[in-house]
Length: 253
Figure 1 (cartoon, rainbow, N blue to C red):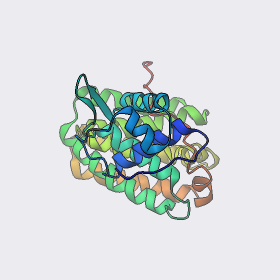
Figure 2 (cartoon, helix red, strand yellow):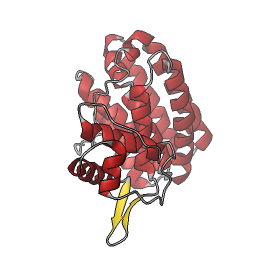
Figure 3 (cartoon, rainbow, N blue to C red):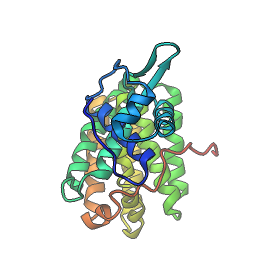
């Protein structure tokens, strides 16, 4: 590993961030054994307690694992790492670099594929959950936050229904960036009706196992969504996800 010295005031955060970057950038590939605490401390210019706590945090986050008597190793990445890395990249990237069009293009690529696969692979439980999210959207017309939570939940659940774990991992950070935009849809008299209609068409195609119609319905829904939200609405909330993730749909009928 390259020797570097941390100059940040918060040495723990600095070390965790630096090691995370090395893992995500491939400088520390899966299976790499880390030096001992003393060597790491000397390498980064921090104390052993700081090293010990940093390694514990990275283990908790799934980046490292310790084998008794052997040492600490970099773990093979899972889909959670993909999602976390993408969200971190988006939060650190200049707003002028990633535009709203970029985000919607990425969503269309991911979500059209998710809708197509969900139509082929989803089961009755998936259909039930999607239906409940749609029902929650309809019940939440006057509550912007609840409506947005149900909207996000529908999209993430649809990705899960594709049975490809990479799709929800890739989608969630993208969806979070437009939550405020979903809430802004209440300012337009067309926003909620268009949203409900679009989600309903997607769900119908998925339940009827029509893969191409499901993908087309998703593309049309995202196109409608994009037209409703001006760039300044989304960009001013670009790095400020309001929701911590998809919520559990209501069990009311």
